[in-house]
Picture 1 (cartoon, rainbow, N blue to C red):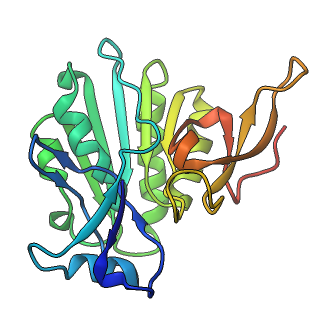
Picture 2 (picture 1 turned 180 degrees about the horizontal axis):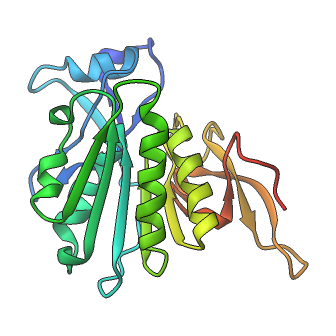
Length: 230
């Protein structure tokens, strides 16, 4: 969903993209972490403040009820999984590994932990990164015959994608690219993805994350900072 409060005026100019955190017949909820001017304004809105919203946009994570599914979330990347877990036909097949830097109480972790098997890891110092990566590798290896879903910051996704490739696991990732229009017109959120060509092989090209994603099969995209394709 794209959110733009009237309080933005002309500065900041562009709307901000957010995953739907919760949805009822009367309300839509979003999980917002203040990271800059736009999110600071959104977090400070008073009840009743005018807000322009458009969406839902793009696609969603796969739901395979009969398949064991591992959710990997980093920081605010946990936001889309609250509704996913609550609506999943077989929540007993879901497992969550959540990593964060602030206290876990700042996130909707308990909501998912009350539905699915869940564990969390808090990064407190430089040495914790390697411990967390080792944990991710163990869990991904255990789910290499299942489905893995991931959302989080770019370094987190790069690591998860590398580990999934090493263990031959099926992985979908949701990109947190910056977006401005949300409808594919501004080309501000593009990523490299495989597109069908004239040859039997597929080539990579720029595609809009807001309309072609934000969820992609990991083997169909190339992340910034990733090793060159082979």
